[in-house]
Length: 453
Image 1: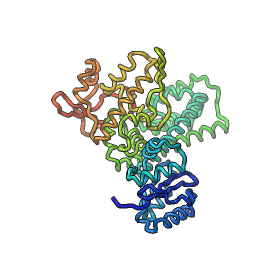
Image 2 (image 1 turned 120 degrees about the horizontal axis):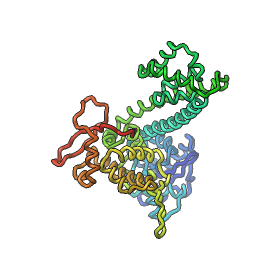
Image 3 (image 1 turned 120 degrees about the vertical axis):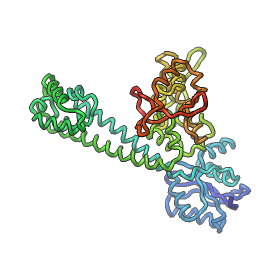
Image 4 (image 1 turned 135 degrees about the vertical axis):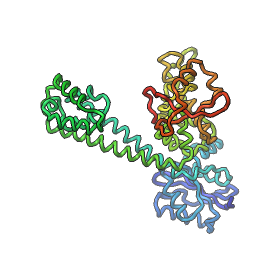
């Protein structure tokens, strides 16, 4: 490691940065100097001028910044661009050091702590792939945001359908693309009754990609003739609103598909991606969220830290014999990570026999304990994911674990998997180990409505 004679610790914020300068003996070298500088190019130059007066040879100076959202990114990039020695320090390093010294949290003291950590050689730098983690997180957060907006817009559109043409929802219980195409051209039951049937049939076939045809059209016409709706035509305002909602839904769906492609492409640079995918119920989006939210897995020493980071630890209250049995989650921590883990748990509790047993034992047949059981299961999933990510080994359902669960749960598992399947299968492939230690690939025959995301 290069020998440095001067260390500069910087606590970054939005508009200004606090800094401290020390030597290897932990002596502060900028006592009489201004300890803040503006988050501008002019402010940056003042920092460099201050440090240069202390140590003209900047190759002997090590700069360090604590990771604080995006506030320090511009400064970090500027220091790197100018060829200076700079590292990003993990926030937990600074917090632990500050707590050890019993210091309050202030910008000036944080800068001093960062500098001392640098001088002592105890700084734990963030992963060199921080930028890639940040870029992936940007994509997953954007997708999450658009997905919520899409759900809201679909709900608004469905409300219009219920008001003006409820029969569409009865006839097309699935096939929302077809429903939207019909509603765009035929917004009331009366417009269907008076429609040219050849044109209507062509629209249904085209919108459904030949999934629906004459039978669906006849069912729609029959339902329209029996409709209680009184609107024969829509006002200009309603027509505009409906078309605006249709355009919005189409636009959002297109953007989400584009984001999915970008996310999948970005994931190829993370070796842990394919390892996480081997876990029961973990799809591409869930894996992307886990990687983006956790970042460098080595910054966590144990699974319980991830549990806390995701806000999964129970918020149960106990006093004597009184226990909050509902097991509410704290709603603190990373909401996106918590949601991804929850979705994995919902699939796993139906299909993974080991985790199904964990869920059933915790729930114990009590509906009020459902959330408590899901929470306990999610904690277990975090432990498994942490293990396979740290060891970089794929997930395998172990024979010894299968033997510990009730026979009925074990039998149900083997009745719902296939170990002989086409090499071109589109189903997700998992692994289990038999009693002889041989590893088998398998797919689930049915997910019983559980969705892998």
